[in-house]
Amino acid sequence: MRLVKCWFCSSTIYPGHGIQFVRNDAKIFRFCRSKCHKNFKMKRNPRKVKWTKAYRAAHGKDMTQDKTFEFEKKRNRPERYDRNVTEDTLKAIKKIDKIRSSREAQHINKRLKPNKQKIFKSEVKEIDQNISLIKAPGSYQQDSEKMKVSVSTSKSVQNEAMEE
Image (cartoon, rainbow, N blue to C red; front, side, top):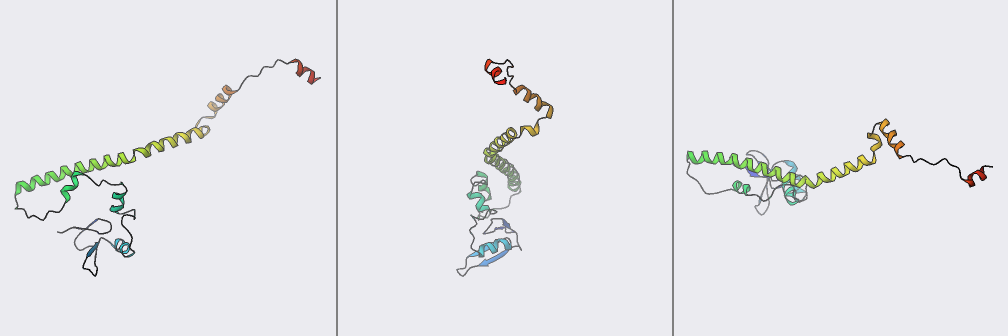
């Protein structure tokens, strides 16, 4: 079973699926769905369309360089079947998949870390501005009494003259 990648979005195309377009110079373009084919016909650049793999790789959204990607490369060398080698290969594939998923999670956390700090600062600022909505009415009145400044009631000579 031969799996190919979509020319536009880089997703896998399974046998019997997708659209194949052959240009006049005999270059073959394979598309996973009509959405990719239409965007290709409209001459859109996959690196500028946000939902494609090319965009995500170009803008640092996905991991692009990692040792685990080397195992996915196509090899055209035929190998003689050996049961032990096949078992080892299947075990290695599972380990590599775990390693890749953990590295992707680390990449996402590292990418989102600055945004978490911004969100925290904005939430603290909003709480400071709207503290009256959060505090209970009784505690708010006690705070206002504490803020009141006592004014002396002794009358000066000038005030007495003005009152007469």
